[in-house]
Image (cartoon, rainbow, N blue to C red):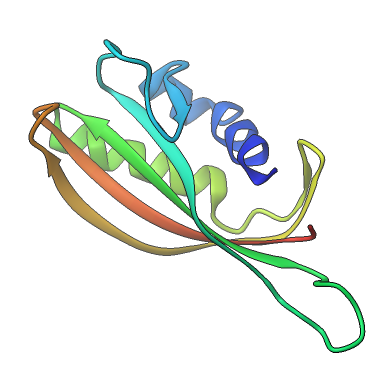
Length: 128
């Protein structure tokens, strides 16, 4: 699944781990974990169908949320995530990825965490 590839790219990017350490989690962080951190997950996955064969590639939307108590640090985390993902192509964690493209970013505030939340969306094109 593409989640292992996203984790490998994020966890293997030294500028990002310098900011969040090992706090990179799929879907939800374990209870009690403190900011800063990154959470990623698949929000959509569609096959690109063909008339005469199975889908040659999947288009996967991945959301990455950075949490930090500091607004500027939150943006630094976003920039490190983008540097780790945007433009990547190759094979990682058993997935052949044609392209990862940055789509959009928005600032947010997580009331319960009392943290800034930077929400970024990426399009991943991968062979199933």
